[in-house]
Image (cartoon, rainbow, N blue to C red; front, side):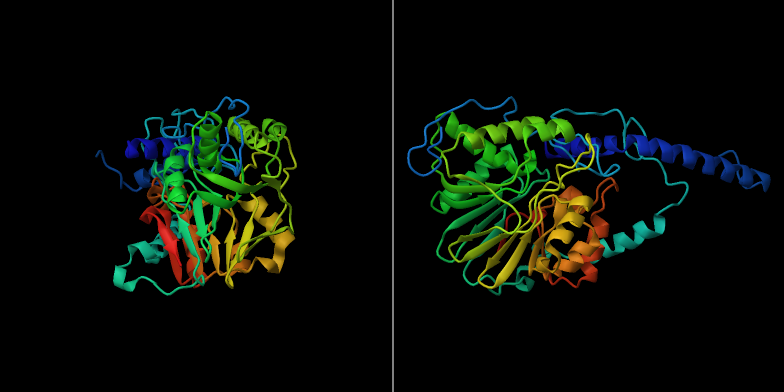
Amino acid sequence: MEQGVRDREMRRTRTNQRGKSRKRKRRNGGNLLAFLVALLAVGVVGTAGHRLVSEGMEASGQVGQVQGQESGKQEADEVNGANGGSAENSGTETEAGTENGNSDGTENLNVSGEGTQDTQSASNDQAELITEGEKPESERDTTPHLGGAELRMLQSQTKGQMMSFLLKTKSGKLIVVDGGRWDDGDYLMEQIRKEGGHVSAWFLTHAHTDHVGALLKLLTNEADGEDTGITIDHIYYNFASAEWYQKHELGDLGTAMSILQQLSALPAGVCQTVKRGDEIKVDDVMIQVMNDRYEPEEVGERDGNDASVAYRMVVNGKSILFLGDLQKKGGAHLLQQAGGGLKSDMVQMAHHGQNGVEENVYEAIQPSVCLWPTPQWLWDNEGGSYTTPETKAWVKKLNVSRNYCMKDGDQVIR
């Protein structure tokens, strides 16, 4: 099953770049023909209900059309092709093409040799980047860094890309960032119940299914009359409207409508819309909202990832920056709005560590610890179409001391 999920994710990503692949094949075919003619000339070629929220919430409203049954409908990387165009969250599978060339899933050779040297260099950098989970236990960092608080990056339950963080304050209060997919919901709820079942603050970066699906499942279960054993004080976000998704990202409209409908059914005061400059204090943690949501310039421009809100949390003197799925445009927007205020001790790698913000954003952050919400296949750059090796090379240049990756299971930083 896990192999099938991964294969489908990779097929969708490759399909997004089908048009570009065809252009490359035509160009490479011309190069190959000229090359073979030259070889022939010299004789070289031969023949061969919401009790969820504190105090008496009643179930109201119906769930939207999409229930978020994300397992088996995994998207791959949304925007590898032309910084847009993706099958993410559509819930459909397209198998008509592959990124590097053939409809049967086979790979074309790089005849032209373009990018070979850069790829090899990036691969060398990749091989040298060791995560904490890959180290022997005796070599792992066990020094307390968060003054008694604890940050956990939860593993994916589907082997797909997702993002789910739990921060427990020194006195035991719980903060959630995103939460992952629908199929990650049960595991997330289990972890929350282990900590007492009460969430003081839940922060959402953007309304994509691999970030809000777990919360959607929790809210849906409560609306259907199930007692999840979980209560929430406040949920913070700044989502675009359903109309925005109709104009800019129709494939994500179902998830957006579902989560917006569930949030709107919660009691007044639970949901809080954030804006740049807002500060929220939870126990001894100060959360800063670093940007306003990026607005695309053209109708039809896919920018659901760039609509991510970035949060900077200061925990007992240490800072953690969550970038969500920000990419090139959203990263430039963040840099313009936050500037020098981005510097942080830890950073969540944007868009699962590939095709996210550009290098200059990480240079502004200057992290000593990187948090990668990245599955194994994406970390390994399976299929060769992802920019994970490039991101790793940037991290190496920044002399980051520790890398924690979701592929290694639940990661705990104290």
